[in-house]
Image (cartoon, rainbow, N blue to C red; front, side, top):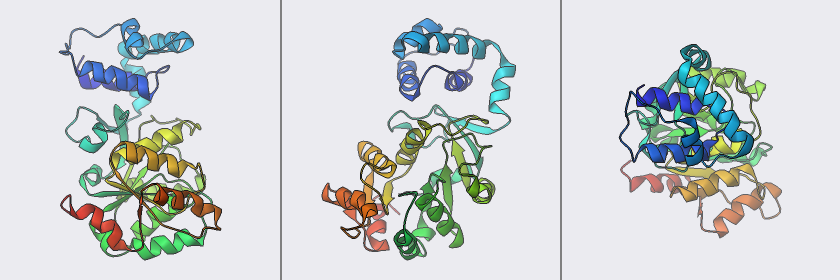
Length: 294
């Protein structure tokens, strides 16, 4: 079995999470892969540090996926995909925290080669985020970089829409299978992104949006981009998780300051206090890309 095919099947296994898969991949990088011999599930379970029911579930899933091509084909469901060992796989994501072994995608994969700006913020954002994005994105930002966000309600939706409306490019990173739209209100937007831009997910089709998937999706956004911009965020919000993941990956974290009386500016103001760059104009964003050759 080719290593690429093995990694796809490992990625599809149940009972093993993103950290366990990352441990296995790190181990694989240290050995000489043999197409005629695949590792035993018990050995991989030990490397991944699986215990109890997780080990049982993983072994059963692993044995089935390694032997049954039809099950694999059904899970892939004719979607296009790239593997972590493919040359098309983004280098910056490969070097980030727990990179996905496989990304399923629809649309223009070449957008991953552009300068990428992550835009995140509150789902229940105010008109302040609308004003921020209309002020910052059109023109020099939308002309020189691709906007990456998570296709959630609020700021994510606004960021994608703003990029599209200003003839820019955008990438949607979702926490479901590519065939599922969550929230459903973004069905048309998700369709546009998958057709004219780029839609990616680490989850196979028919995978619903479980709560744990959204922090996992956030790590992909943080790993893909060179900088993350936070417009509005409550204290301890998901947007701050993305910002912290970006910091762990040595990415630039940018935040828009807001009124100290606004609950949705507590998170962004605290980011600035902790060292994030305050953004007052599009030049503040562009400066972060000039030193890397934009």
